Image (cartoon, rainbow, N blue to C red; front, side, top):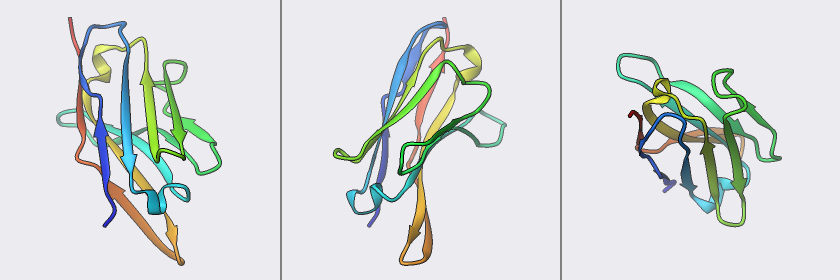
Length: 119
């Protein structure tokens, strides 16, 4: 059974930093594209950042220059380092792992972790 578990959320002041962690099942981790998404109340879930198996990254325009996604294949972990946080970054952040195994696509989500940016 594939597991995706986020951690690291919390309350932070504007301008502060926070690091989110995502642990995914080792069996598929190295072949997966891992993405961080976020969903604010009343809004749709949007991609924040993603990292492919080879390390290629992409970011939403709203977080470029402030957030950095990285992966540690040896630990089956993905991190989202968030800096210069703004109130509009407040949301539930979800980790997603997706790819293809034996030709079949897969797509797994974590339970989410709350990030609140407020003074």
